[in-house]
Length: 320
Picture (cartoon, rainbow, N blue to C red):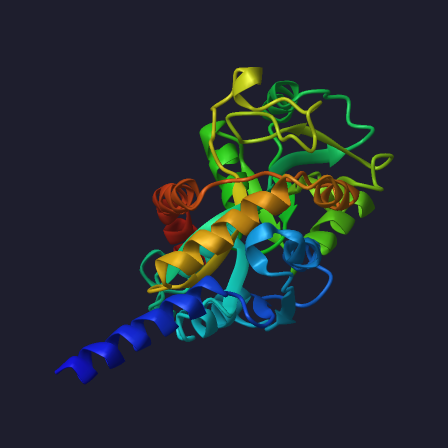
């Protein structure tokens, strides 16, 4: 009996030591999109600084691109991975919720399959119009387009993305006749606005960087101003329907991670968001470092699900 107890004690001590040493090797950080997009940029910025966090044992996170299914294939890969903290996922909650809702056949609910470990930045949708448009605010723009009686053609980065849903919510709330023109990716949606193929766009504000001579942002759907674009007022500030939609860029792991691993990764995420170098890196990409706790990130995802569900159902029905 004593030998069994001693063996059990040794095994328990060994397991505790293994957890205390996490991570002992580089961690895979999977991105569900091709290289070069907003998620990939955020992942590579985060991955390049995280080794300096005190809880990471100087181990980096290696970004692995696994495009497909608008990020769902990568999400499923991580959900099915060993719950040891060596396979993680990064995505913005807006895309994660919208894609999951728009793909019911995948039977994938990230709220049940993935564990939020914290968030490092956020994507914010903006109402974007040509720089020479006479309206200087979203409220002026709404008044002008309603007075014109014309149907507004607007671009966005996909039929059921966070940006598209914000566009539908905004147009419907302000009773504007509209026609969405979805593109594959935000850059294509931006280029359509610059070319004059559409009269407005609901797109990520980071994509306006370098195009300020062509595009201006009239408002954002968050409760507070985007820290990366503090000069742009919220819709609520302008007396319009106060939407509360942002897409925090969050790190996820499979459900069942050891508590010690969750603590180490969450601490590392917060540490990175407080690094000056990471803040400068995100600033060069038109974004701002921003930390959300795992609890706040999970709450945001659930709220987006509730907000997006009726709009996604409407868009899906119209496509069919």
